[in-house]
Length: 307
Image (cartoon, rainbow, N blue to C red; front, side, top):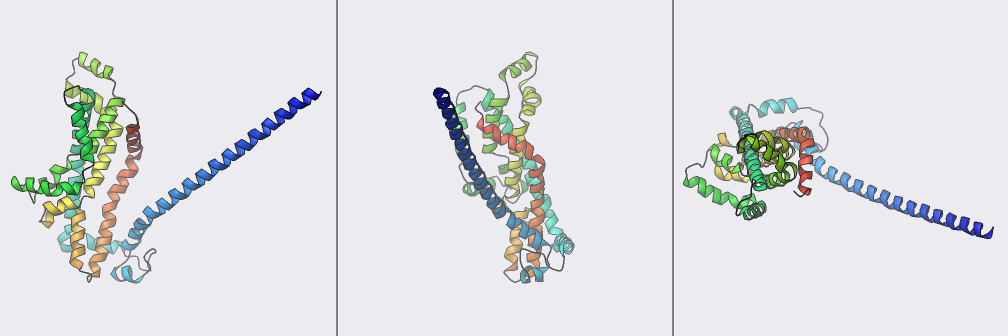
């Protein structure tokens, strides 16, 4: 009986120790979740408050913009009037800026994504001398700030006579070192060599194999590159500022800044148009992120897979 009692006592102590360890682990896990959630809420608050201010300010007239509390709506809802004035002011110049930005970002992101896909696919699936050196150079190019390249690009465009043209902004936008990097990583991990060999045996050429097989398998990565390129070109300010002098060729970023400089701190009417124009310019980016998020999240996750 004494042995049985001892065994029961040991089992009871082990069970209690296990329950205590479970409670401690649960407590630590709960504390970690609460801390992580608090940090995420603070970050969300930090990023969403400026956008909320932008939405609220776009509904105010010039007087209410400076005379009422910035983070809440005024008694006069003036959004529709602001939009009408925005798209008619100065011979509808904002519409020109909006179309220019769509052209730069749309064509630049589409063509840039296609070129990045071809380059990444070639680096991943073809063996040739200097491949690793080329890829290392591309990785190094990711670290170079875009502002550093603005002056050399301006001198090159000036030499060939393309400054103050659409091409001076569009051509540099076609290059994406990050897109080449992501395409190479994704192609290495998602495109089986056996599938490419089967296509070649069936008589498919190299470009047809890439266009009909490889690109379809690379869709998540390509959507990620497309979105990142679109956002980067849409928000680009310094390159168009350096390259362009004709306001009819300006993108939204440069155009709104010219209005901001024109105000000189005195023209409150233009301030309301600047705020409304900034809100309108952010809507395509929000729509793209929401509609394509299931693709670009998967594309970014592919970077952790080694091919």
